Length: 106
Image (cartoon, rainbow, N blue to C red; front, top):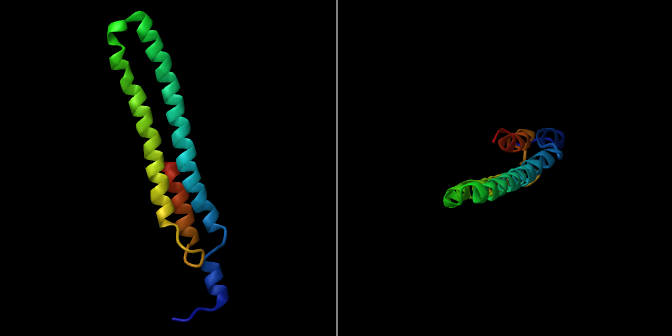
């Protein structure tokens, strides 16, 4: 099939790549902000656990590990979305909004 230039430009909006890359950026930023916040709150919990119940300090390490897993999950999501980004000629607006929404939903 042969398409006119106006048809291709209408189907592949140049701003769609912006939304796709915003999905990648938000995957990294929001996941690592959440992981940092979780690690900070867990550190406070570990400190108070060390004062109140020193025998249970090792049990309070689990939330720190889980917060680290959250950061790694955001990295994996960003790599997967980045792998799906195509050339600007074939990257549609639907794909851009879908990649932005993929991180916003998680």
